[in-house]
Image 1: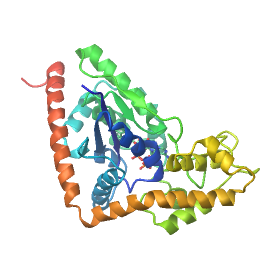
Image 2: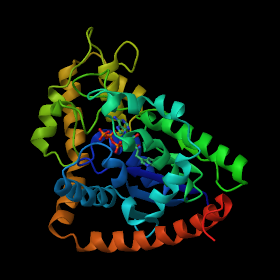
Image 3: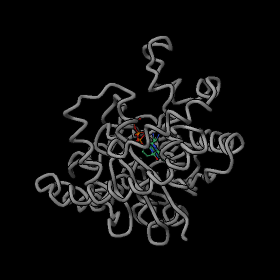
Image 4: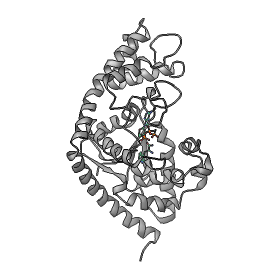
Length: 330
Ligand code: ATP
Ligand code: LTN
């Protein structure tokens, strides 16, 4: 049987170009020769405050984006995490073999709890990695394509799986992270030290997949660059330009060398103008499809219903084994 691939995105807003290049774009290729599950992880989204109405719209928008970007529901299972209750059940069980010390070391927890301080951080935010481990382990996943920011969570999922197997007998497959060479960490267009993020206060640093052509052009033309001029891929010395080149590379298919040659002796203005058109042309059809799904969500609901049924059947089978291993029930 072909290896199983699992990944997910939180419905905290419409996805952005970082989500696309770091995650979704790889998924489209991977689904050609793997069994895949792509989830909309709403139980993870509520670990930080969400407006219920907006989150429901975002959930549909993420599903629409998956389809608009080329995830094929005939090949891949697309579903909403909270519609398969086994995720929460397994997360509880895995929580009993996860150490507080391990959770305390997670940089995402440290970042996201910074504002209100540790004392006020929710238990859900703290336990987030146990739920993520449950997502992955529930389906005997062998590979998880994610951006670099998720590496630490994935390492912990591996530790939890190994520990459970040792304590209760072989139950879970140990998953591997799939992280690409370039583009696993797209940075904000306004600050090359910060990752492009849905929750960034500076909206101009993030290109949303439903931004129109004007918004995209503005954001790219206003993007920060580096001192010294020259379009070279040198992430250490030229972090801002290297970030823009990474976007260029992913959306045009040109290698970094080809891009450098193309802009030899030219200024940042020419480079940015071309990049803006590449992004506009690339995202145009995605945005159109996304808007069609917003107007006519019927197809979307069909895909999500079928996805839920398929995921549920797999999750139920695995949970039966887990309950037996742990000694739950009669
Ligand atoms: P939030 O800002 O709400 O925390 P996010 O933008 O980090 O959200 P997620 O839903 O957490 O988005 O991430 C979905 C996927 O996109 C994950 O695989 C994550 O690693 C990837 N990803 C997120 N931001 C980037 C980025 N800037 N560059 C590359 N990949 C990214
Ligand atoms: N934590 C991830 C989203 C996520 C995920 C997963 C990714 C939740 N469960 C399982 C891969 C596999 C994030 O991107 N912030």
